[in-house]
Image: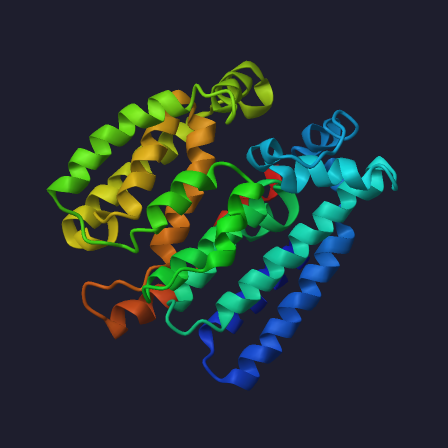
Length: 324
């Protein structure tokens, strides 16, 4: 499997770097073919979280009511609806295939987005492609819809389809809310808003409708989501990155879209580091899909594009945890 993963990365890297459309299409097709080979090699039942996703099948009767809109119906309701006609294995495997197709489509689309630097595309791919396409059944659709939303916010546009993200995962709700401000420049009112938001969020997590407080407890009580040294290291590293961005590119992080999401991340991090880590993916997507630059530096981009090849280390480091 390792050779396929490496070849797959190389094709994506090359497709990101070349501007010639025909060459880019060629490497993109090779990338797709290798992802298909990888998909055929992976046994879903051996993937992380499979047992957790499988355990909810047959536990509830699918229904249509207003309440289900706040119970992440994309997976919970649909998988049980499918299970009425098909076996549990067929039902859950259907969602793995959907995630693979949606994720691959998104990352191929990203290859042809000229405004995003090639090294950012490769970093996004290295960090999240395999997680989105193979691991997360509930979150993936939400992350991808939000990613498209963030990209369009660069041009003061709002992708209305992205507001379906909360049907996949409720963590997208604060992100969707702050996106309505369309990257409005931060000011004193934003700081006051941030303080009020902390109070509001503390109340929100205890509302039964959103079931967030119970999720905190669930994450803390099971070893499957144990907090590791990595989660703590990641938090402090990401905090330093944001502080540096505040100093050198203030408008990227101190605006009415990013700042509330960042506050949410901090609150979730202190509640449970694993939930905080998974929520931080929204922040990383925002930063890497932002086209806000202090000053365009072609030489700097050239060096980063060359260095991006070494992002393969991220994939190889996580490979065992993704494909045990």
